[in-house]
Image (cartoon, rainbow, N blue to C red; front, side, top):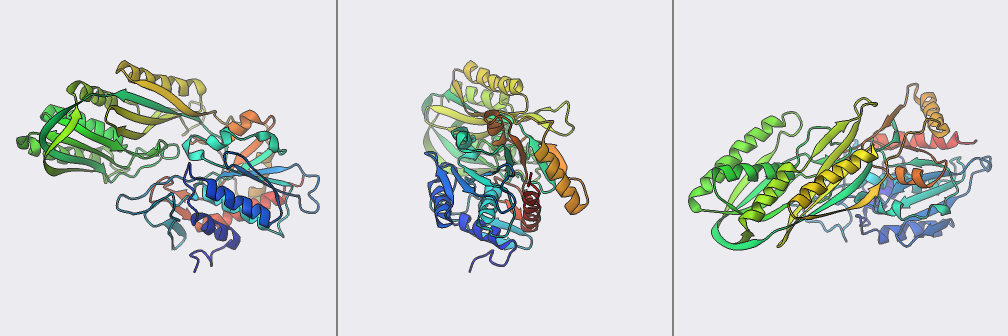
Length: 483
């Protein structure tokens, strides 16, 4: 029996559950793309599926709306794949296990993909409708948004006639997003040399962190396991000698790392110094992050005598220096919009290979020059230590449009429907709107969506009551876009 069979709106949750049964992590979107094409064929809609697996489905205007300007509805079909360490789940072939608990929907031990599966579900429900008035629709589903907006970046916008767009990739009901930061992923490659060594092997694990989206939660004073590990390794060098063998933390550059693990070799008589420091720094970190990340845990586990390939002391010093100087968190708040993060940085992926330390950092800013300057800072740090640096997935900021008839109409509809004002806000998280705004002259764009909590983490929850309310608002907006 379907988990969401009895929830409203039925079509939205029907399609969301179907989507969740299909693996659709970033870089693995062929199956979900083909599902959308089959939907279009089954409903006799014209469609375009490009070489990247982006899909556009076209639906004619309903009677009385034939002369209304075309409207684009847009979201992305890929999801961030995160899971709890103890959970066995293969995102490349397994569907999600849904769990409804009161008003909230989650997945068992994994991300839910409400970001942005709910956009796909909304779009399909509207396309499948026979009684909802609306202008001609171009429903665009892009791929690989979560790994650098790659689908939108490679999409041929000439297949779209519309110049009004509602993006469905927001996670805050009652807010209309009208501007966002630009971003880029910075990749550091720091060469290392190794030597053979023997000693008592310990596994050091930093875990229990809250994590979260590096755009939406970067200002909530949440800790980064990768940064904390750098601090621990630096402090450890002051209390005992050790050799670093393994180091790994984080899975996505746009997710604040919740865990980081290292393997070290020490002399047997220095094991107690490691465990004592772990206890002390755990206490210190919990006090430092009181109210925002109080469950930080540092585990130092003995694994017995071992021979291992460890970092040469010079390479180890470079790695620790890099981690201690790598920027993280909010770098600057906006000087014009109160409460808005302007520039931030999140080293989301950390991996020590045999001959190289690799770090991928998500860099965001509403100001292009500030984004570039922060990227250059990490580049300088990397190259100073003898490494190499490159960038990928560079996307522009979505600039605020002073004259926006679509925004004004949506604010009016919200006021008429609920008797209160819709919040019109700029955000720090990146959206595909910036790419479309840059490439489609005259584009009038907004973004909305239901409440989704703790996106990009295994604690992700979708507020089902909010899904219903946003659906009702969205169809009322469509009804009012007759001119």
